[in-house]
Image 1 (cartoon, rainbow, N blue to C red):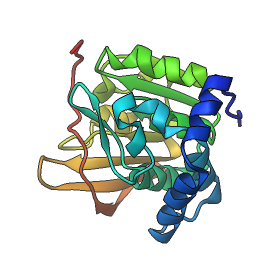
Image 2 (tube, helix red, strand yellow):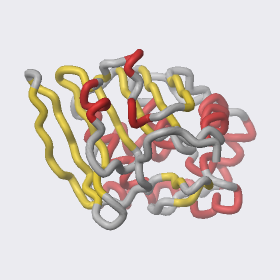
Image 3 (cartoon, rainbow, N blue to C red):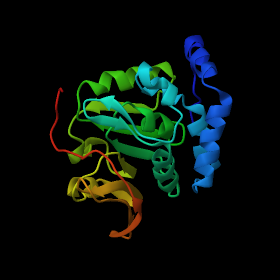
Image 4 (cartoon, one colour):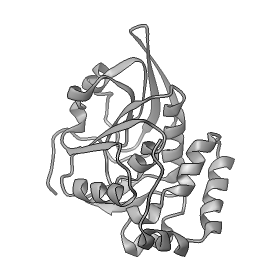
Length: 226
């Protein structure tokens, strides 16, 4: 998998965030049940402060979701780690991410999977995410502005699908793009109750289980420039 390659200014920014602070976050995730050391290593390595506004950079290594504008958030590190850990259990090579957002989950996944296709419905977020990924030297991600509810059929089927916003029901278009032996991880539910679900496809049949209660922004169909 590709290694992160950062500019001197990026490296300086990482130096400004205490190693102790980042180690403390990783220790907290381990205590919460994240056991995959590759995932923990990427949580430690990916500079989360580059994915939030400068005014919030001092909170970047807290285990909490933070606003990124346009009614969207950067997910809580524990949730990013949990979804990544569960997805990696099937060893996916080609992954579809629905909801690029600021690109943080994308950056973590890109170090652990061969190729990532990521879709974002908020047009203004796409160039910012691309720029951050390029700054980190990540080259195995293809990103586009589009309706993630419909997936990305031209590049399917996918070994793994990860959805970073909550539909009220699992989109059938995404299920249709899940490869045999593949796995989808996504939150499902409304404004008050959401479940993090894992869906596996084996011998043409789908099995589903619930991991945890979560809280995500809603997954909406269509696109927006706002």
